[in-house]
Amino acid sequence: MGSVAGTTSLNSILECVEHADTLTDLQQAIERLRDHFGVDHIVYHWVSADGEQYGCGTYSIEWVSRYLEKTYLRVDPVVLGCYQRFHPVDWKRLDWSSKPARDFLEDAIAHGVGNQGFSVPIRGPNGQYALFSLSHSSDDATWDEFTSTHHRDLILVAHAFNRKALELEPGRAQEVAQALSPREVDAMTLLALGYSRAQVASSLSISEHTLRVYIESARHKLGALNTVHAVARALSRGFIVI
Amino acid sequence: MGSVAGTTSLNSILECVEHADTLTDLQQAIERLRDHFGVDHIVYHWVSADGEQYGCGTYSIEWVSRYLEKTYLRVDPVVLGCYQRFHPVDWKRLDWSSKPARDFLEDAIAHGVGNQGFSVPIRGPNGQYALFSLSHSSDDATWDEFTSTHHRDLILVAHAFNRKALELEPGRAQEVAQALSPREVDAMTLLALGYSRAQVASSLSISEHTLRVYIESARHKLGALNTVHAVARALSRGFIVI
DNA sequence: ACATATCTCGCTATTTATGGGGAGAGCAAA
DNA sequence: TTTGCTCTCCCCATAAATAGCGAGATATGT
Image (tube, rainbow over all chains, first blue to last red; front, side, top):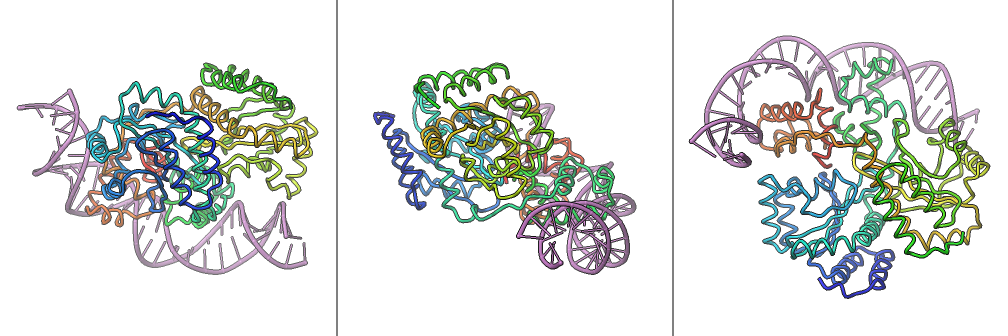
């Protein structure tokens, strides 16, 4: 991990990310970044359970396909741990106590990911959640020094990557989320708090029929298949908070 | 806007934010930051649908109370515009076309906010949405140069503020809930994606009866009253990601 | 090795949610 | 003014979810 390169180099990579025109440019930038920091791997990827995903990075094809195939997304403590945090986190500080998590770690190391890691959680509009991660093989002290030295730069790089990914990825950009009306927000919020339709209706002092109209219109705006789906989307897109 | 102070000063303010122990320390830091950048105002605040949570900054008491009283939160193009964006934005580039927005701007300038502004949107776990904003009175060219010079620093400062605010605010303290089993996570995730119980059962290749057991046990672990509640809690506590 | 948790399957009756219609009043923007 | 959105109310039949009960096999952790 000889980060012999100076700040100038990082700035030039940042500029490179900020002026990227294609996803290929981002892939090149992430490789330059890995060389700049002198770590084994750097990866940026969106995390979502419903198919649509984008990622770029330096992991081997084998590991990426194995990760998807084994649905490690559900097991990976990095994904779940960062989801509950705001600040970047060292992989050592996550919860590896469960057996599936330890098996996953073993598998990851066997595929060259490295025994150390550092991830920056990033969140965008409409509930977007992404991770920018570095991984490496080294002892604890070396890695701790590296991360504490560079954590600010890493936040900026992660931001730059996410901005570009949002800009270049067609799916997300055009999905102009239609906001919910106040009454719809009320309905979704109370449903998310566990009230039945009858209870929500009486809480809002409206008939249950009217309430159903709100739920229906919220469902349509959110493109949801049923009430559970609608509440889940309203939550993950930040339209309601509980 | 003479930012005569060098990088050292910014770093010391960042350290100051990162080591803050009370919300008062944050208020002091934001005042130092204003002096460092030489702008009229800096404000950090959470934006949430269910009433205001926390904010600090250098706006006058009059303006803050007027803002709340007139519910400018629903009108403010900064709040609405940043909600749809990931990257920081200059206030000039927002949509001021509606009459309420123009009236609001006029009122803001009359209360000393300034005619220029720059805001960094920040998002945390559980749908948190916050803004870190600078405002000033100057011409376009001067302001543009200022923001393009400092936008990276501003992202870092905004991050540091949000991290501390999350840490110091009591309400956000994580309730330690019992983790869900893998099968329960599967069930909750698929329900959150809009599948019916029958569909979830066939997706997981189990009987619907078995699925119901998972839903029930997840409900009990989450202290939820029904399925919608359980999915909402699983989401907001970060047990599932969609 | 033993206790705990997880995973799997089954039953019945009652309550609740969902699908699709339609309709009028108010308010604000184009 | 007209268009569009929001808010409110109503019908019916069918589909789905819920509460409560029980029980055995297979992990997993101490």
